[in-house]
Length: 358
Ligand SMILES: [Zn+2]
Image (cartoon, rainbow, N blue to C red; front, side, top):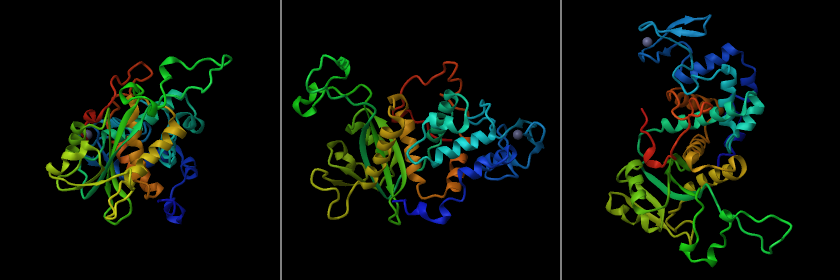
C-alpha cells in the first residue's frame, strides 16, 4: 500500500498551488526541463543535437546552432498543434498525475477552461504517448499474469413487468448467467479482456513494473504470444489454473499456479495479489471516473492505470519529470491530431497493435 508514503512530508515537493503560481515563462522552462531533463540544454527535434541552442526570446523559441531549425518546447510533441498556454499545459499534466483514479475531461475543463473537446483530446494524447513510449525491456524475475473483464456488461431485467416504465431495449436484455447454458449467454459486444503482467519488486515492495494488453479471450495462443513477447525466458510466471497457461513450462518459463476457488495464496506464497491490485485500480476508474471505456480506447485507459500503479511510490515532482520525459518526447500524436476535423482512430488496438517504442 502506498497510502503511508503519501503521508510523508517528502512525497509532495510540488503541489497544484505551486503550478498555478508559476508565470508563463517559468511554466515554459518547467516544460523544457520535463522534456530535455535540463533548463540550459535542449535537443533539436530536427537533427537531435543536444546543445545550449540560441534563444529566440521574442518568439519564445530556440534556434538550432547546427541546422538552424527553430523550435519551441512543444515542437514535434503530441501538443504541437495546441494553442493553449504552457501554464495550462503544465497544469493539465500535473492534474493528470495527481488524480489517483484517473481524470475526467470535464473535471480538467473546470481547471483550465477551454472546450470539452480540447480537454478530452489533451488527456487522450497523454495516454497515447504513454502507449507509444512503453519500455522495450522485458519483464523478469517473478511475474504475475492475470486477465480481467472490462468494457461492457448486460443489465438485469426488472423482476416484475411494470407497464408504467418503458422496457429495457432488447439488446441489453440477457441476464442470469447461471440459469443459461454457456453458449446461450452471449457476451456484451463491448466486453474485452485486459491482461496484466506485473513484475514483482525484488525488495518485496509489491510490483515494480506493469505491462498490459487487450485481447478478446484468454486463449492459449494469445497468452503464449503475450508471455513470449513481454516476459524474459527463465522468469517465474504465476497464473491461475487456466489451461491457456498450461504450455508455459515447455517454453522456457518456470510456471507456478494458484487455484483461486480454493485459496488466494498457496502455502508457498504463490499468489496474484499484484495483478489483482492493478485490476482494482482499473475497476475503480471504470466505475467511478470513466464509466464507459469503448473497446477502441480500452488499451489507452489500461496503460494509464499501469503507469499510475508503477509510479505510486514516487513523489509528485519525480512523477511530473517521468511523465514529461515520455509524453513530450513521444512525437506527434497519431490518432488525436485533427480529431475535431474528423480524424479518428479506426480500429481498436489489441495487443498485437502496440507499436514498439523508439
Ligand atoms: Zn538541429
